Amino acid sequence: MAVADLTAKACGLVHCHACALISRIQDDHACPRCGAALHSRKPFSLQRTWALTLGAAVLYVPANVFPIMTVVRMGQGEPKTILAGVASLIDAGMWPLAMIVFIASVVVPIGKIIFLIYLLVSVQRRSKTYLGERMVLYRLMEYFGHWSMVDIFLVTLLAALVKMGTLATIEPGVGVSFFGAVVVLTLFAARAFDPRLIWDSANDHR
Ligand SMILES: [Zn+2]
Image (tube, rainbow, N blue to C red; front, side, top):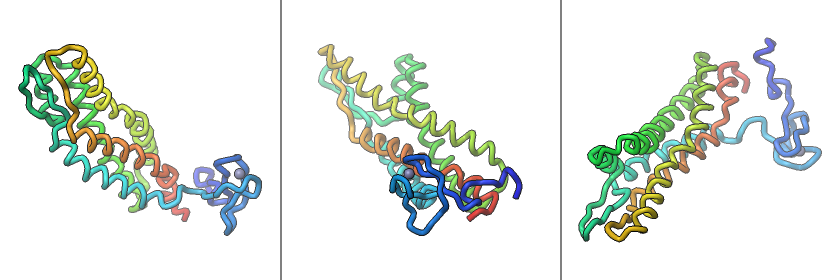
């Protein structure tokens, strides 16, 4: 066995996530020292990641179709979707803000969903290519995933700012709830994916 293939799982060993004890893989799957449930890979990682990713992809549609907020000024206003909101920010000359909203609410969630599907398919096809690159992308996805919440903060911040004046009000739309659900589902999907499966499927350790 090559050093690169030497894993605890291949040696019949398992690491306890609660107390860090290394023990032999046995049938009862409980840590002999602290009693925590033992598993050498996250249980049902692929199934759970698929379910959460597809759920996020489905909810991304209503998140964009339904208005994310309504700005009422002088008694008049119309509901705005994410993209319409970006367009009106550009109209108002607020380019940096428009960029932040566009990246946080369009580029990051779509990129995350596409990349999660790519990871899942490549593991299931037992791909042996781009192993290191896939790990780098997985880490980037975990890191940047948190930033897609920026949108929710932005709507809240705008609402708070505007409430201080009396000329306009901002009401959050139903799209915010769908968008929040997309963000939470992609966070859980990235968490449910076990990156060790990338190397397992390449080395055929099952
Ligand atoms: Zn333990």
